[in-house]
Length: 67
Image (cartoon, rainbow, N blue to C red; front, top):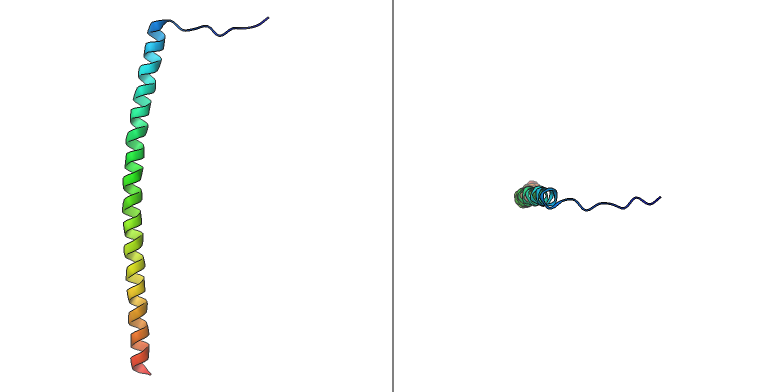
Protein backbone atom coordinates (compact mmCIF):
# COMPACT_ATOMS: atom_id res chain seq x y z
CA UNK A 1 0.00 0.00 0.00
CA UNK A 2 1.75 3.12 -1.19
CA UNK A 3 0.48 6.51 -0.21
CA UNK A 4 1.09 8.94 -3.04
CA UNK A 5 1.10 12.61 -2.08
CA UNK A 6 -1.67 14.46 -3.83
CA UNK A 7 -1.13 17.72 -5.64
CA UNK A 8 -3.16 20.49 -4.01
CA UNK A 9 -5.70 22.39 -6.04
CA UNK A 10 -4.58 25.68 -7.66
CA UNK A 11 -6.28 27.83 -5.02
CA UNK A 12 -4.49 26.06 -2.17
CA UNK A 13 -1.18 26.29 -4.03
CA UNK A 14 -1.72 30.02 -4.63
CA UNK A 15 -2.39 30.60 -0.91
CA UNK A 16 0.71 28.61 0.04
CA UNK A 17 2.86 30.53 -2.43
CA UNK A 18 1.50 33.85 -1.14
CA UNK A 19 2.28 32.85 2.46
CA UNK A 20 5.78 31.75 1.47
CA UNK A 21 6.41 35.02 -0.35
CA UNK A 22 5.23 37.01 2.67
CA UNK A 23 7.48 34.95 4.94
CA UNK A 24 10.43 35.59 2.63
CA UNK A 25 9.72 39.35 2.71
CA UNK A 26 9.64 39.25 6.52
CA UNK A 27 12.95 37.36 6.57
CA UNK A 28 14.47 39.92 4.20
CA UNK A 29 13.43 42.75 6.54
CA UNK A 30 14.77 40.87 9.57
CA UNK A 31 18.08 40.16 7.83
CA UNK A 32 18.42 43.83 6.83
CA UNK A 33 17.75 44.85 10.44
CA UNK A 34 20.38 42.41 11.69
CA UNK A 35 22.88 43.71 9.13
CA UNK A 36 22.25 47.25 10.37
CA UNK A 37 22.64 46.18 14.00
CA UNK A 38 25.86 44.35 13.14
CA UNK A 39 27.25 47.48 11.48
CA UNK A 40 26.37 49.56 14.54
CA UNK A 41 27.97 47.05 16.91
CA UNK A 42 31.14 46.87 14.81
CA UNK A 43 31.41 50.67 14.85
CA UNK A 44 30.89 50.75 18.63
CA UNK A 45 33.46 48.00 19.11
CA UNK A 46 36.02 49.86 17.00
CA UNK A 47 35.32 53.11 18.88
CA UNK A 48 35.68 51.38 22.26
CA UNK A 49 38.92 49.73 21.15
CA UNK A 50 40.34 53.07 19.99
CA UNK A 51 39.36 54.75 23.28
CA UNK A 52 40.99 51.96 25.28
CA UNK A 53 44.15 52.25 23.17
CA UNK A 54 44.27 56.00 23.76
CA UNK A 55 43.80 55.53 27.53
CA UNK A 56 46.63 53.00 27.56
CA UNK A 57 48.89 55.42 25.66
CA UNK A 58 48.04 58.22 28.10
CA UNK A 59 48.85 55.98 31.09
CA UNK A 60 52.19 54.97 29.58
CA UNK A 61 53.09 58.60 28.94
CA UNK A 62 52.10 59.56 32.49
CA UNK A 63 54.21 56.71 33.88
CA UNK A 64 57.20 57.83 31.80
CA UNK A 65 56.86 61.40 33.06
CA UNK A 66 56.79 60.23 36.69
CA UNK A 67 60.02 58.26 36.24
